[in-house]
Image 1 (cartoon, one colour):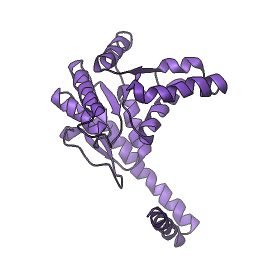
Image 2 (tube, rainbow, N blue to C red; image 1 turned 90 degrees about the horizontal axis):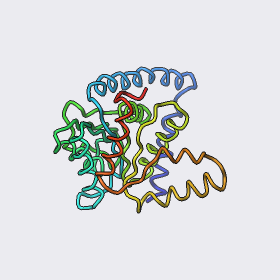
Image 3 (cartoon, helix red, strand yellow; image 1 turned 180 degrees about the vertical axis):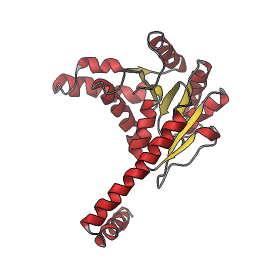
Image 4 (cartoon, helix red, strand yellow; image 1 turned 135 degrees about the horizontal axis):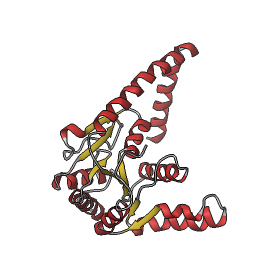
Length: 241
């Protein structure tokens, strides 16, 4: 099954390029710039109106009867009760839980959807005027960071890790201002960050010990809200760049 899928993918790639000259490929890339610009403009126009929000990340595969779905919903609800809206990737699992909690709390419920071959579909808890569709991952990722006052990262897969480590990198390199990055679920996250501290930092010196100050690992909705509220006693709420 896997090899058949790989052959199909390879065939698609060959068909895509076999009838095009290098000049035709360059021309297509040039015109793609306008589509990318349109996604940025549409995203900026819609997101600039949402007010202070927190981005919630996590697995699309988490089921409604699982504890992290329920915890994500409760976190989102509590965020709305403390003046924050919620941004998610707009799909099922943890994303749905985040939008559901925001909807229940009558706060802004934003979904940044992307067209994917599996897993991704709109969840029903996104505000109708705050459901934004993207074709490009990198444009979508800009919206997650630019308009978030914090990241709440639930247990997830490679996409969740991608968003997490990109945010840490942007703050570490001072490309954006510092904001809270809160990992929920110590049973899930402790192992990864034990490795970061012991191997990546301690053994190889590939990051600084103070970089770990950017991240906090918690287990309850109260801890999430307390971290955000305490942080914004000192800093203003605004887009990150």
